[in-house]
Length: 338
Image (cartoon, rainbow, N blue to C red):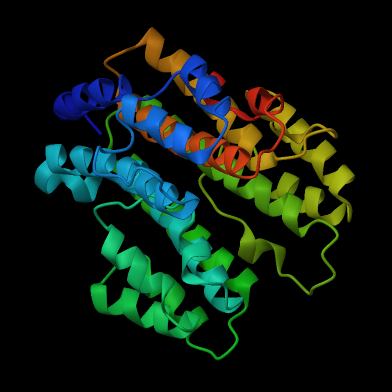
């Protein structure tokens, strides 16, 4: 992303003003039932007036997904033909979607379960997500991606073209494709901040992989799971973390490797939800950088991460209200506090 993206960054800043702040989110969490929550979401402009007066939790979840997808579509339309140069904005969502859908297909999960929390993008619009979620097998879902010429199809099709695909092999394939597309975007960019963000993204991808593989009793070729392009977690540290054989040992190695970054604390022994903590820390770090350089190319990326966090927050609020769960815990669960 270069100075030619100033118009897209301006649009992202404008869309960011429509995201709910912590006070609004906590207020939503105090609603006593689904009807009250739906009414409050309408007042905030998240749900449309056409939403049923007494909607189900599933209907609200669908509306939330469409609301988030509509924001990303605006970014895509504003970018016009340049949309193919925006993997930093859309690829993370596509990767999350494909992971959820293929895991769900392998586990024969209901389509609605596979779709929960996914945000449509220009490369995987809502109709495509729904068709993938209804695919009976990972093989069929992979064939659909191939027919649509999705950027990840070539990487994952060989893995999914078996009756019972190896989910670890799938994760490695999609992570590798993701890292390659980020690296290509970084090489095209004139922004040092964008290149640093890409290296940081690859470091964190490697760190979460190392933690997942530590203590795994499978015969894993470690070097095949490592993604090149990071700057802090190098191959030697990645291998040491896995070879510790325990989550605690891996966390210690990863904290050491990432000591000069804002993310070392995410690997502290007491961290329960690693993905949430990394998202919170990334929001804080990017927010600081964007506030210091508001015209920087990271503005649109920061908005996309804030939108992801907002959808997570709204989903948690929805199901807390639906199940009449403890409201006091919501404050600590709201990632938008970053």
